[in-house]
Image (cartoon, rainbow over all chains, first blue to last red; front, top):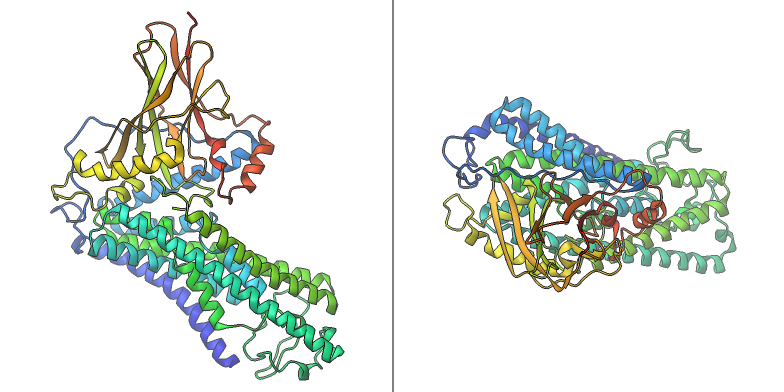
Length: 386
Length: 205
C-alpha cells in the first residue's frame, strides 16, 4: 500500500512537472502554430473570433488617476492593487505581442508573466488557500500531500476555465453576460460544496471523538494518548496503511524512518481524531475548489480569444494555475509547519499532542464549513453590473 | 462575481463626470462616462457583434448597457453625492434617464445620466461626489484629464476639483484595519479607502 502511495505520489509530482512541460509545449505551439491556427492569423484575413476592426477614430482612452488609499496601511494595499493592475495590463500586452514581435520570446514572456500573475493573484480569495490549508491541517496530511492537492485543485480550476470559455464562447458563441452568469453559478456551486465538505469533515471528526470517549469508558488505558510504539492493539478501526508520515526536517521525528511494511505509530491515538488519509475526502476537497474557474484565467482566455490566439490563452491559463498552485501549496505547507511546531512545543506530551490534534481537526473543519457557508451566502447577493 | 471576498479589483474603470445644473443654479444630477479596461471589455463584448460586421454598434451593445444599468441600482450606481464630507447622508438618486455603451479603441465606455431626487444647492456648502465600489471589485479612478465638467453652471464662481485619498494621513489607520478584517463580510467597505471624490464649489450669492 505504501508502495502504491509512493507510486501515486511520484505520478502526481510527475504530473506537476508534466504541467510545466505542457505549458512550454503550448507556448511553443503558440509560437509555431499560431500563425496557421484556426483561431486566426495575426493580420492576414479577419478571424471570426478576432477583434472587430474599427474605423480609426480620434478617441483616446482616458487614463485614470492612480489608485491610492489613505494612511500607512493604505500604502501597502495601494501597492498590491497597483501591481495587480500593472500585471493585468502587461498580460494584455503579452498576448498582443504574440502577433507582432518575435513570437517565441513573446510566448516565453507571456508564460512567465502568467505564472507571476498566478502567484500574486492567488493571494486574493477564491483559489482554495483557506480550504486546502484547513483541510491538510485538520487531517493527517503531510506536506507532500498538501502540495499535490494544491496542484490538482489549481489544474482543475484551469481546466474548468478553459472548458467554460471553450464551450460557451467558441462552440456556442455565447455572450460575455452568459459566461459571467455561468462563472457565478459555478462559484456558488463551489462554495456550497466547500460548506458541505466542511460539514462532512466536522461530522466524521466529532463522531471519531465520540467513539474515543466511549472507548475510554471501556478501557481507560486508551484514554491517555501515548506517543510510544507499544499500543498497536487498541485501534484496529484506524487505517494504518493509508496514512503517511512526512515529517519536516527539524521535526522531532525526522530521524525516524520506517522500513517498508513497518507501521508507524507516533501520536497515533491523538492523530486518530483527525482520521486517516482518505481519497474520498481529498477528491471532495479538490473537486469543491476546482469546480470554480479561476477568474483571472477567464479574463485572459476571453481576451486571447478576441485576439485570435485562444491557445495562447490556454497556455497562459496553465502557467497561471502553476503560479496559484505554488502560492496555495506554500500556505498549506506553512499551516502544516505551524501544526508541527505546535506539536513540538508539547515535547511529546500525550495530552498536549491530543489537544493540538483535536484543535486542528475541529478548528480546520469548522473553518472550512464557515468559509464555504459565508462565501455561498455572499454569492447569492445581487448580480454585479460589471 | 460574488462581491464579498475580493480584496483586489478585477475591473478598472476611468471616470469622467459632468455635473448638471438646473436653471435655478442647483445641481440636478450627474452624467457619468466610465471607460473600462481591455480585459473587462473583451469579456463584456464577447458574442455581441450579432450581425458579424466587425463593429460593435450602439444597438448591439444595448442589451449589455441595460444589464449594466439595471444591476447598478443594487449598488447605488457606485455614485455617492453628499454635502461636504458628510458621507453618512447621501442624496437619493433616481434611475438613469438615459444610458448607452460605446466601443472604441478596444475599450468600452458606459454613459448614463443620474438625476438627483431633489436638486442640491452647492452655494452654502460644497457638494461632494464619491465614485467607488465599496467591495472593491471594480476600481474606479477619475480621469487624469477633464475628470469633472460642469454643465449649465452659473457663469461665475463654480469650480470642480478631484480629491484623492491622502497616503500621508494617519487618522484612518484604525478604520483601515477594521476594513481589512471585515472584507470577508457581506457588508464589505474595503473599497472606501480608495474612494476618489469630486468636489463642486460655488461662490455664495
